[in-house]
Image (tube, rainbow, N blue to C red):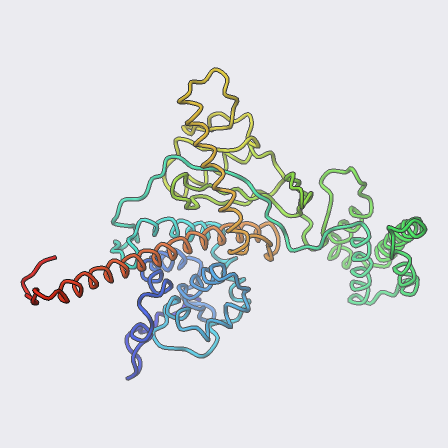
Amino acid sequence: MLAQKKDKNQLTFNSTLEEQINKNHPLYALSNVIDWNKFEVTFEKHYSKKMGAPAKEIRLMVGLLILKHLRDLSDESVVEQWSENVYYQYFCGEKIFNPKPPCEASELVHFRSRIGKAGLEMMLEESIRIQNIESGKKESSNKKGNSSKKKRTEKEVVVDTTVHEKNITYPTDDKLNKKIIKRCKKIAEIIGIEFRQSYSRTLKKLSYQQRFRKSKKQSAIARKADKKIKTIAGRLVRDLERKMTPSQMNKYFPEIELFKRILNQKKKDTRKIYSLHEPQTECISKGKAHKKYEFGSKASLVIGKTSGIIYGAMNIEKNDYDGHTLPEALKQFERINGYEPTRAIVDLGYRGMKQIGNTEIVIPQSGKDKTRYEKQKQRKDHRRRASIEGKISHVKHDFRMGRNYYKGIYGDTINVLLAASASNFKKWMNKFKKDLKNFLLFFAGILQNIFSLLSHKNLKFNPEMTF
């Protein structure tokens, strides 16, 4: 059920949070430029107005999601730190300090599922919109939540893809086989089936034999142990399948089929399974010297050529060729920003793409049959294109896109969009801090000039003096 609106007027004789905290703090300034009403009006449709227990306030939940990725925290940590941090509470709409946790960590999971991909794209759209607002000033908006100021329209963009790694261990056949054995035993315990043989002692001995596989004598013994473990995994799967009732089989059929697929896959097969709990994980090679293979999905980012703002971010389910992901990335850009870019600057991974709609695709080419001016312009474009590599690195290391802890394909989409939104919000906060510092230095310079003039021997203070 939709939460009832609380009276936000002063509830006690004590001062409010707004009167107590530092007005120059970036989180205070950011909370005053985000259009929270837009989220509340849009997300109301996801709640019942009569039935069910009252939900948490929409601004609170949206604020917690932003803070989570802005500060690189888990669901549990952001909920815990909210009750200790007055700036977090003010950002989420509190008027007085509240020492209690705002919600259970699991409520963030339900809220993300509730608002869906469209709601997360709205958060990215809002992070783009605020870039045009002067730092620290509140923006007047109409009832629909649209900005009264003109939107920034950056016609030239830079597009690139990166690997969005899943939170899984480095996959090997031996690890997968052992996980199948463990899971089969767990299922048998749940439904009350007893195996013909559990192989507990055998597996322990085989694990000892798998050690030191790089030594000359032990390598053959380790390979033989690997084969035996795979054989045992197959036996347990078949034994489990035989002893299940039809109703039990219907319940666990997807898992059993997954086990069979893993046991039957060969070295050079395509669409292999690399994880039991994340079967959609892809093996992607980007040609990195320090990391030959990465396991997860691809993510595509679109940033402004001059501003560095992330204008588009999307997850790509399959390990597609980069050029085939470009139309969808530009379509998302148009959906969020309301216009098509004139030029998209990309690397050689997008070979074969020259024009998509009204957007020209700029790819590095040889300098033959080009004037000096054209060569110089291309060189500048692709030097600027390299800026997206640094942006990708920051989004991965600072805003939780380096390792994805969310479940499933929808979890990949969530992580990319929230990380991109947090990066834009952080960019605005950094600009606010820089503008504040410049203003203070300018003001200090004016005071210094005034004092130096007043300290002159022949000069007396005159209130009508102008500087």
